[in-house]
Image 1: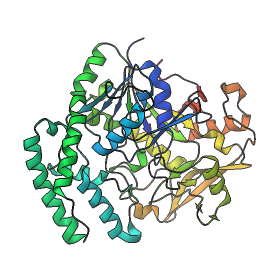
Image 2 (image 1 turned 45 degrees about the vertical axis):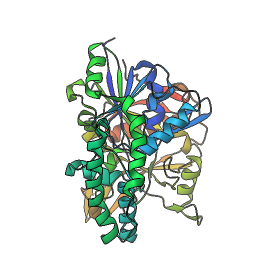
Image 3 (image 1 turned 90 degrees about the vertical axis):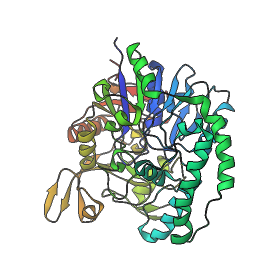
Image 4 (image 1 turned 135 degrees about the vertical axis):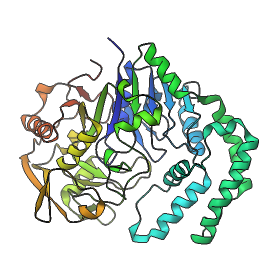
Length: 439
């Protein structure tokens, strides 16, 4: 069997269950590569009942023979990395020896966090709903060519001069425009000296490592974060993240040519969720704090444990949105889908699927370009009978209830992409592989 480079992306607004599937498929890869995002991502893995939540480190870390690469498209928070490494190594895992970081990774530092949080406060009820972890400001610095990168730790004298200049620039905005507390240079510099000692031994030429693996015929997994509908260019702008979350982001974010990518696997929840603000046409609005809202939205949230792995925020829940998924399939070039959390819907008598939007008298089969246009869209639904029996842990297609098979077949037809993998529970073992992406 020849080598395969597989890209795993979320097809909705994130939280689709990418971590579990990356972990599942890494038994046949030499390395897993993260190519965008930062520690605003939360990938939850459950193995033999033991839960692990990852934010920066690729999901292959739980397999001892797999190398983990953080590509240049990832914005790296050294404090978050330090904490995550310590937590994993406390369980007996070898992490530092298997983790490689691109020299070109932009760093997230204290002033990025201060800016992110001050901006969200200033926006008031128009807040985007960021995690407040400095992701957006770090990407801004990258594009503005004033950002500090992991490779800058190689020359600490030059790093110190750059840090002073950049901090002075940002502190002016923090103190004078946002009226917030400026960041202390001395405190930050002391942290950076510590970070450099941790990161320097892990720096690597990630594009060259990828090339060497390909030349040796080794399989690689490229792990995306967040979801397609949060893509900075193709998502529900401006309620989006600051990176390209689509499969195309693997090329510039890791340093691999597009002709080297063999299979695009889109992780897709059997219903839909979203964290934070922004359009969500098929939402079944429910507030867990007040216990007010749609009872089905409540049921999906409770049964699906729909709280963010990174922030703990309640996820908004709703029906499957075929309109949004058609766009995801289109711009990712999906080869196959992995359908997750089918079991969460086991109790429902009826299930709805959004098949189109109505906007100003027009029927849309693909979503509009901006959040403003979403505001005047209403979803149109098809209703199907539920299966009302447990699908947890089912390990064969024939064992699925006929109504569940019908639901899956309908989604495949609506989106135009086959379901290759079916997740029937949170554990690694609770997975049905219908068509193996490596074959």
